[in-house]
Length: 204
Image (cartoon, rainbow, N blue to C red; front, top):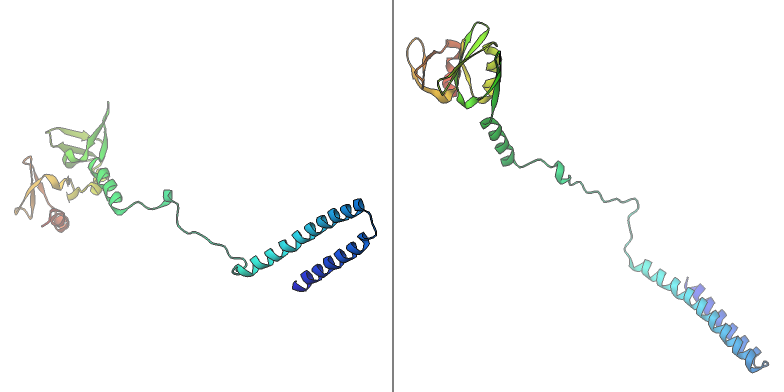
């Protein structure tokens, strides 16, 4: 590339000498026209040479770029990030505290807070609900259905016929192999297969 630039400069110099010799035989107007044409010629080619020079210089100073290199950001979008552990726990606690179940009756569906249920007792294919306010409700569904529904809320199956809320257990009576005394005075028998599970739920 340096050789080409040197050749171009020699060509411009030779052209300038030839033009000067030829201009000695011309009049003043012709000389002025030749000078203007020469300036335009020198400016055009001089600009091209300067542009080529600066491009070569810039390419030499820039660091080489690795081919086929793509920068990828693997940070997941904020909208899809998992919530903090505390936030998950707060949501679970809120669901557990506000848990309600539907108890269908002949003329209505009653929605009750599970915190108000003291215990449930099987009556053939029916289930009798006992509430902290003293109310009692008979529902035409089996105890097994409500056992599966209420166990996640902390209820425990003390007997085949009894499902209790541990929050309303007052004491463990050492009679008949084990009996639960509830806050409302009810006594609930504890079957032998369920004895250890009930003790574990109550904290032994």
